[in-house]
Image 1: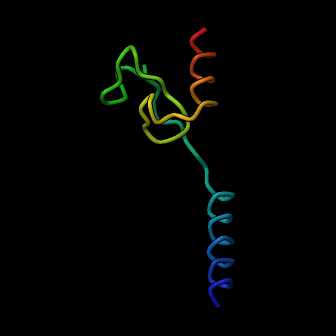
Image 2: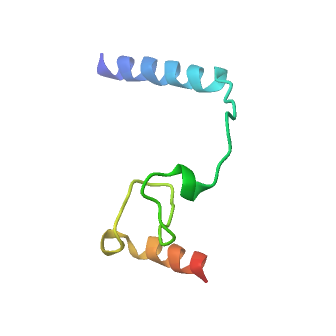
Length: 67
């Protein structure tokens, strides 16, 4: 029963994603648009994380980006 609910939810989610029509509404400078962003802020595809809590590969990616 739960597997069927999950399957149905996944199907609906995929339908919504595929039928969506994203629209660009504006463009701005990240430092002006992102609250709390500073010149030392590093953006990445995950939730906020301190340097101490980053994984080794993530730290390596940040260092590589800075170089």
